[in-house]
Length: 287
Image 1 (cartoon, helix red, strand yellow):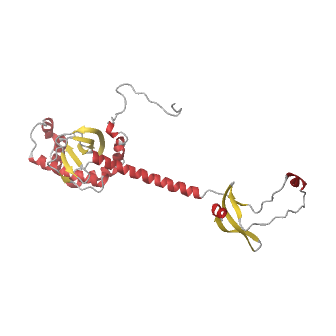
Image 2 (cartoon, one colour):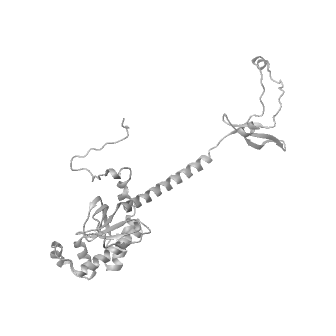
Image 3 (tube, one colour):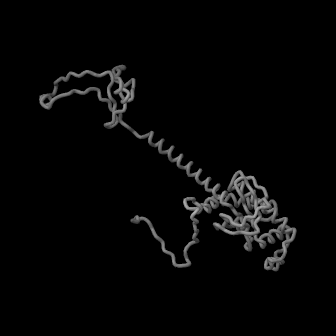
């Protein structure tokens, strides 16, 4: 039975938000939370990427957007090996050419033909720039924001085309291309492991807060000094001013509500009575 507070939203065909398909082998693993994990680091990524392009290429840009895609096939990616697994890097040629022209201070007017003809051979200058961007951006993004610490080494012999996650980084002022970070399943699991650690830390904080609140709850401790067995007839004969003979035991029970917790001795000091020599109720009964 559905709760009255739950809401169901129905979308027309073709107008629903982007959907993410979960494979059977990923059930029980929060792969859908990877975009949120990365987006939480957006400001930090924006800062380090902006500083990197300004220092290395004299280009004033910033991170505009990050798009995510799960279970993708990406060829012609440069592959790097880490202690966790493999990471791939790919940059669209139009973006690479624009960065190259901006670095040398050239006008973008002559880029139209080169961008349109992506089938032309890649020059040595483009290849060197591509390798430089790949190695430095993978290490920068991995170490600063996502997988600290991370040791990155180029793996030219690896042939990997299937990746668990694809992250497309869009830069401001460069609308004709993106650069892409490709993650294998091991690195995705490492991201999710960080999420579990945060969850465990949050649960620990909640538990400590609950314990602190519980320890400040007010309780009333009641001591039963004497018990007098009587019949109903004797109780009916009691009148105001009558005296009842009672004797105090060496240990009297102490209660919280109806639950006995301790036994204690009754002591007198300066005309006042105090409880002393506390014993756990079960231990006192055993004695």
